[in-house]
Length: 149
Length: 248
Image (cartoon, one colour):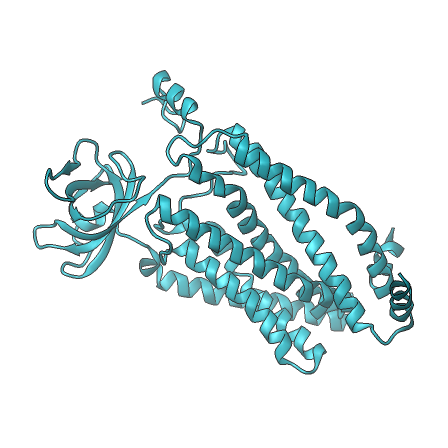
């Protein structure tokens, strides 16, 4: 290769490499802030700030969802199957919200460790299938990831 | 073989070859786009949880995938024009930017439309969505930077450097859903292991992804032809084409 072109090739590689390194270091330094939410484990272990607006994400625990008869108030617990955080909320819920489904709740954590949520977002997973396939999987005793329950 | 590649460096040849490719690729692209849409929207079952709203995947995912791939096309063309000073690589880079920007915008817009009924929000500043917005701004930045220079050679160099620096964003977008907690779900189509989307829904999606790649290529070639005519407007071959087109 012509020496001048070789020099320019090195220059291009240098630009690509060092900009990647710079961005890599920045994202590494900010890694905690890039996370959209805290998992329940970190909330229970006290890593999430109390009295500040935060987001907590996890699965809505089966059997934990309670709805008030006379208002939109609900309570449930968010879990990552290691720890769980109780959440209270009053308002409109997204269609996909439900027990055993992922959700992200934003709100303020009280001293007792209860999240007073002001917004609930549903988090759906990467599984797509027709209803009859889901039904067949349900009956065969395999979950959607193909593992036995 | 090599003479073919060397001829691509000559504007009249590139213009002619792009025309021949377009004559075949354009109808194929349109058939694949329409066919894939009909297949995906009318002939697949609704999703077991999202119902019919998941069907926006047939536009959202192809647009996002090709917006990422298009950035590599732009950045690599930029690198080639920096290193070897091939003018045609500069044409490719300049032609790729608006197409990529349009695709990134489509991906963000359809994502917002999809997010409202499923997540309950149009927009959330999670890692995937924010890094995708940065991609759109990088494309727009390349377009704006090119126009900001009067000297087009300097413009090409500056844009090539910007697109090279921005290239680091592509793996970040791709891996963002695995590296950080985000609202956006991980990828359903996996290169290793089984995809977590039912085959009956996967095949029309793959067709749509292929159709969007073809669409990107078509738009790129058409943009390149327009750019070539503009750059070479004083030359004999362009005047000949102009005279021929004028007679029709």
